[in-house]
Picture 1 (cartoon, rainbow, N blue to C red):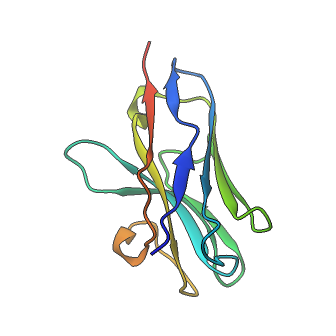
Picture 2: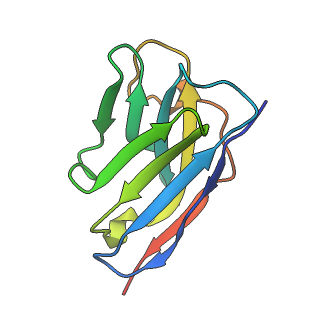
Length: 125
């Protein structure tokens, strides 16, 4: 298996911004769906944003809609998550995953794979 390598996390104050990256040069995932997930203590992995599949659908969890933007550069084998206007409830470990289906559901984290170690995001004043 070739896990993703996530980076770009850090500590910011509420209202701040971060740009996360996930890279995987070991596989060709240009036709896969890519999604970002967030894990906080006591909760299961939460789907935040996804891109890909038939129609190259972009979708977001309601909690981040209008604040986060997902993108991908298949030539660089890297996906990104631009996070603006961060809130304390955005704190968690962020992971990206992939699946090779035609459609996706952000609530179905078990359908994704190639998980990396994640990158920690902490939002506090």
